[in-house]
Image (cartoon, rainbow, N blue to C red; front, side, top):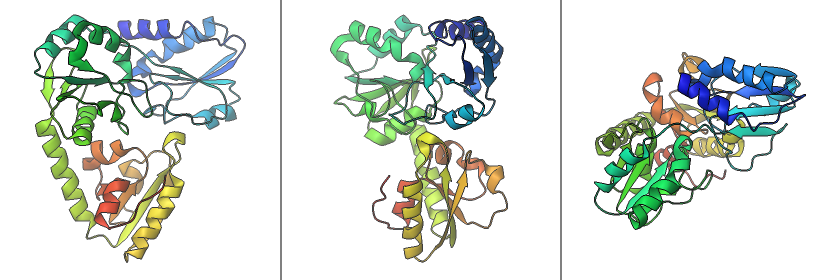
Length: 313
């Protein structure tokens, strides 16, 4: 906690807020630093500080409209970097938080892995990639991301792994980004935790495939489907949802377009749908699948199940 608070305090030092009304978004893992953030901004001359307590799942989840309604002059989004070039209602300052990493330990593990490594990571460890690459030279390849920075893997964009290599290594906590990298490239993939633990993604990928095949099999029996739009700015695929609903209806199903901010299981509990297609972040259908009573598919999976044509986004 103390180290994280100090990192947050350090990252906010260059943010100009004097005389401004400031709104702040914090991801779940940083909410314990809310008081630190408020204190720093007030000491830097912020006129007012508003801290959102809703979850902030990424830079695609920006509460600029709500911040404007509060009268804020600027929104500070902590823990993530910019996602694409989406226009916002008020200026948004992204404050990606760099977490500590024992680089020498990481390098030692990477040296033990045979072949050329496509190395990527989440936003919290991006600043270390250059140092690692300089140390290991041609053994490391760092690819470009479509939406994030070079070497950054996102839940919706593992394209940083799309380079000529023998194996993927994702420096991160948890296995989600590793599974996505494995499924995207089809090659051997490891997650390397900040503590230096190497985790083979193959059993996790196999479990993921079984889960997704089960979801698709259940969805094939559906008669009425909820096509879900999230109003989050970076995930809002209204056009795709409308097109998909038409495709489902052309295949003999009933399809209703449902709208939400957060797609939580309790929000649809008891609703009369046999399956759902979530048109926002694919992580919802993967990470939260077991929490839903009915199958939840991504857009790509829905098109596979119901033989639809390409959906424009």
